[in-house]
Image (tube, rainbow, N blue to C red; front, side):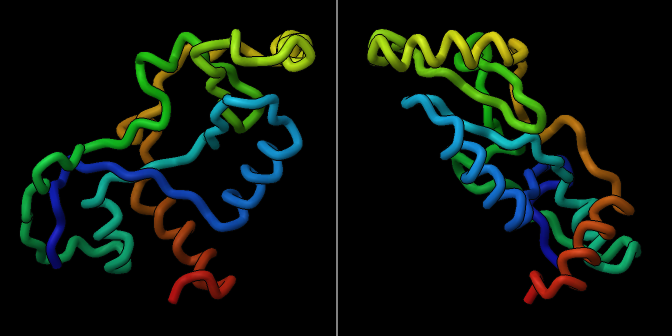
Length: 148
């Protein structure tokens, strides 16, 4: 087995979660904002162990490709001050609120009252799943016929 790096982390999203995110965004969109799901993540070494039924496989480390990051960012430090949380979703508001019409700005102020200011970065190197959690996710997806 080959892996890029033992430190590399990636987010996981199920098809159902992706659909729910799209529906939530469609129901709540004002215009210009970005909707992000609070997703769990794992490091690729633990993913390799989980895929190998909990046994550490023999693996070769390839190293990252040029430009490849060790972690993913869904909310950056630039976006964090404009970030709000609504349940299991993060909403990044547009940089230029002047682009919104008067009606949309009014709707945003109403929406904003119901949100919690998050201000957090969302990176894949935090809130990591352990091997057992990854295996449970993969087993559930396999049982539901979502892994081929």
